[in-house]
Each structure stands twice: as C-alpha cells, then as structure tokens.
Length: 279
Image (cartoon, rainbow, N blue to C red):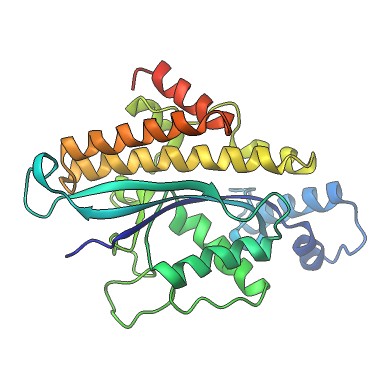
C-alpha cells in the first residue's frame, strides 16, 4: 500500500468542563471547587469506586499541538528494502494562539483533516484525544465529514486497525491490549528519550487556572516531540523505514530544535534533556 503523503502527529491538553458538570449534577450556581469535587465523586459512583478520572465528554480542550511532516519513498542509501519510506519534518506548532477559543482549536484540527487527509499519529489518541475532540465538536456544532468517511470499509480514520490512517502508538505497542498498555513517559525513558520534563498532565489544570496558556502549549509540543520519536522507532522496528532513513529523520529534528531554541526555549530544554540522556 502506498503510504499517505502527509503526516500529522498530534496531542491535546484538557481541563475539566465544569459547566457540563453543573448541568449534569444540577449545580447551576455552585463554585468551581464544589463542582469539581462533585464531578469526581460522580465518576467514582458510576464506576463503583474504580476510577475517578473524568470520562471523555467532561473535558474541555485548551491546547492542540502537532508536528506536520511528509511521507515519501526512500531512495538511495536510505532505501534498504523495497517500499521503505522516509519521514521529513515540516513544522512543529500549536493550533491558534493563547487566546483561541476551544471551538477555534477544534475547527482548525478537523479543518486540516478535511484539507490534507493526513496520516494521524498519537499516543492514546483513539481512546482519549479523538473521543474528546468528537464530543466537543458536537458541542460546538461543527462538521467533519472527511474524518468519518467510511466509503472504504477497511481504510479510514474510524477503522481501529487501519494504522496507515491513524497510528495510535499505545494501541500498536500493546498489540491492541494483548499486552500491558504502557504510558508514553515510561516508553520514552526505556528508549532514552526525554519523556516528561518539568510539566506533566496533572499540572495542566493549575496552569490553566493561573492563565499560563503558553506554558500548556509548550508542554503539549514536547509531548508531540516524544510521540514523533517513539513513532520513528516503531517504524524502524517494523522495517517501514531503514536505519539510515531513521537517523536522517532524527538528525533533521535535532537541527530543527537547534534552529528554534532561541525563540522557543522549551524546545531547547527538550533537546538538552535528550542529549543528557545519551539518546
């Protein structure tokens, strides 16, 4: 199969949707702390005490970060077997800006899929990121027909095993649940990649409350970098790309981070942590 030409590695950051919690729990005038506590208690109740983590509809998107690239046939020294590909980085960014609304962020995400029909790459995107994006798109009355096109039954974004359309690394690394689903930070540490730096997912709500949207966007971009690097190793393992092509993609990313670190210090910190791990 010819690989999809456009590559789109993505991640989202979210905070609890307390307005939805107020509507669900009939707490229209309750303060945020009370709603937050009640929403957690509700999820414990409906899961019979097993899980306090909010389900997908109750998260609000505050950042969407992505890496754009291309997928091309490898040639010369980078093609060690027929059909191998090489990955080329185009851009690492976050959607909109720090003042963008949730609707604008999600509209931009699905709008890019409508325009470019890229190959998606995520870590736990099928179980969390995409369900959140779909619920929130419905909340805002958005439409995304390209994403839901199933005219080809087996090759589309909603087909769980069509990784040429969406490679969810958590899914493929666990053989779709046959083995343990391992957190991305754990995988990164094993592979000598930076993983989480000074910020983690549980810090996002506090950063958002403090109005530090740029810090959330920076953190989300480093998660995208980790995802891309794990993806490159996965493609090397599968033989989809050659060792030479893999090394070229990594070298290109290093050069990109070096060039951007002056204007975007979080990328320099990521690169420094990567080099410090001996990767």
